[in-house]
Amino acid sequence: MMGRSLLLRASFSAAFLMAASAPVSAQPFYENRTVTIIVGFGPGGGYDTMARVLARHMGSHMPGKPNFVVMNMSGASGLKSVNHLFSVAPRDGSIFGTFHSATPLQEALRSKAVRFKSVELSWVGSLSESVNVLAVTDAAGVRTLEEAKSRQVIMGAVGSGGGIMGAYPRLMNALLQTRFKIVAGYRGSNDVFLAMEREEVHGATTAWASWKIARPTWVRDGKVVPLVQIGSKKNADLPDTPLLLDLVKNEDQRRMVHLLSGNMQIERPFAGPPAIPQARLALLRRAFNATVRNTAFLADAKQAGETIDPRTGEEVAEIVRQIVETPAALVDRLGAATGLK
Picture 1: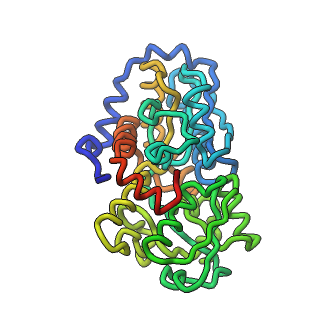
Picture 2: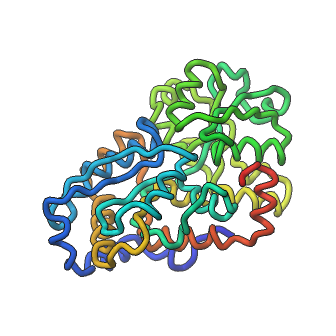
């Protein structure tokens, strides 16, 4: 269902060449300009880290060499920042943001906190495709998902209801009879990691890239114990960690897992407000495409623990369209299993 269309299979190089031929009439706008990247979470997590890496490099690939700054705007599991981009932020190309890749799913789920239309956002691109990993510390006392069926494991989650971070363990409780208990209310993934250090919670579910970026020593020293990965395919780092798609029992359950994890194709998305002037959006996309191919950026990203597997703005827009147009009956089944609303 979430397979890439023929458009998404087109080579990134071809998209880059098309973007390179975009008109440059917006060039004077960016001279002596500051461009703001809003991050939908607090400092220290994977989204924040990669926004800052992008900000260090992207300006050098734009006419006028604008200065880039990063501003954090946490709240409502990242939805506060998207609502701001959609309704409040200037639509002149001076601001765009990064937020949870599952934001389009929140719209499909008809979340009351959603006050935007994902397909109307000005999608700039995405840095990577990843898997989400439900992992615990050694203090949890479990080392396999099977053991989590007989012992309660406390999972931290962001937002009042736990958001997407809480949805994954809830779905496993419903489909696999695990005994995860979700403690929600944390402001961002870094706060959840701190709670793990204090042993308030045993674990969390977040992108594997975020584990590597935010807590590289945990990964290196084996303090993180991955129990299951959620995505369309296994991450090369985790050949022995089961894939949730391989554990569910029937096609209906597979469709729910596909829907919940479809966003992992665009794990680090960047988008601006609707109706950014076409020439300026073309410049932002062209600069993004050039940045993610730049050796200095790639070295910086690697040092931060991120594996770059980019998507163009056009490709991201198509993936988003597929998510928000999911049939309502399937969305409702997923909502009932996860508590997502």
